Length: 244
Image (cartoon, rainbow, N blue to C red):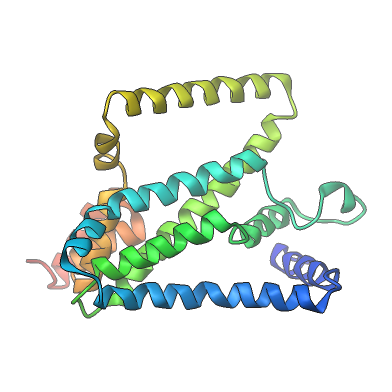
């Protein structure tokens, strides 16, 4: 039985254990509201005032960076997310990959994650306003969401393993202390904007805009392979006649 099959079986079992029909209706309604609000956040781009649009576009890099930080940091506080506690599955041959995939399935069941996703949806709409290829810009945002969410869950499971040893807990405390000190230093010295400027946020925002405009040279490298793939993709595009 593959990991994906096991995840699907565990999801069905968890759904079966929800006995109340009202709770089931509420869960389905909440799940349906997410794409609805996402659609609404795209529609509002046509009604936003010019000044507010400029402010939203300028805030896009920080929004992308903020999602990345929260998607990575939030799971670390829980140390991994499971459909069922591990001690309830001891008698079953559940693969380690199944635990990881199940944590990805449960990642959207988080209000902060959903709110941030809606923010990115709105920002994608603003960045692609008056451009013909909204789908391409949205694909860049989707790739960011998948990458950051996967990284966050993977790091959460690493933290879970480190917490089981004394040296691991010491390493985690040291890392947490250094991270907190670094964040406090950045805030107190007023270099928050520099952090955003040197992060992946501006590159993602530019790729979303380029994707919406149909500019493959500016869209493909960041969306598909990251900044390190820029040179190879540009050479390919030049060979295909897409160069400037």
